Image (cartoon, rainbow, N blue to C red; front, side):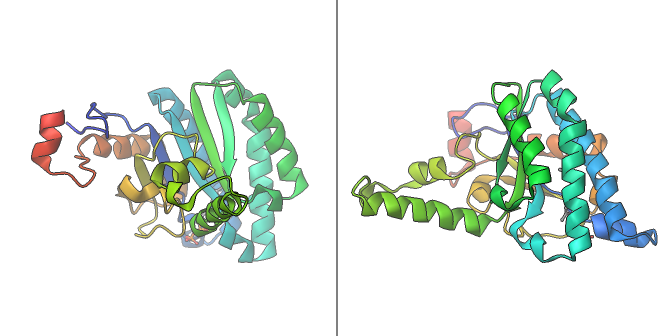
Length: 249
Ligand code: FPP
């Protein structure tokens, strides 16, 4: 049985994050425009959010748009923004009915108003929901988030509100935008690529990793449950030995 940092059984991950990759290839293999892959990918988002809530995850973080994705062709960026807006409007009743709290990480100020308006309204209205947190990474970069946290700590130190010697793992983690979330247990990436692509670099330090060849538009409840199942078999040691972990458990 796997154990968490406190030695308790951790059959179900509390916090899962997903790099939803392969939309473009899914479309190209069918002779379709890349944006059709994103459209189908948005359906996978709906299925996976529903499944996450059903099984009782505490938090799900989705890499919906990276800081680097702004460099994609303008029509592709435009379609992704439209899909995000559609998701926020169409899924609002289900999110509220299921007590899901919507949050974001990333430079959300860069998102256009037609996305930010329904986003901010849903974040505000769902703030008291407690069953699960759905966090959308929007205009997000892991390095960018580490830099902005470092800058905030430096500013505190420059004002005399913090001693450099008091900067530690715990304080740094708390200052990140993910600070209020459970620690990341499982990071999933679809489409056969085996890299982090600037996603949750700090938070993934002790996460279990799950890579699958399935393209994101083909990823649904069944494979999501399979990823959760594979987590059950992992032994999380946090740098300790197997014998130490067994003694704690
Ligand atoms: C990567 O596939 C995927 C993205 C850059 C965007 C993810 C967006 C969605 C799944 C839809 C909208 C999101 C929500 C939350 C409703 P890719 O285009 O890089 O695929 P490729 O590597 O095959 O080209």
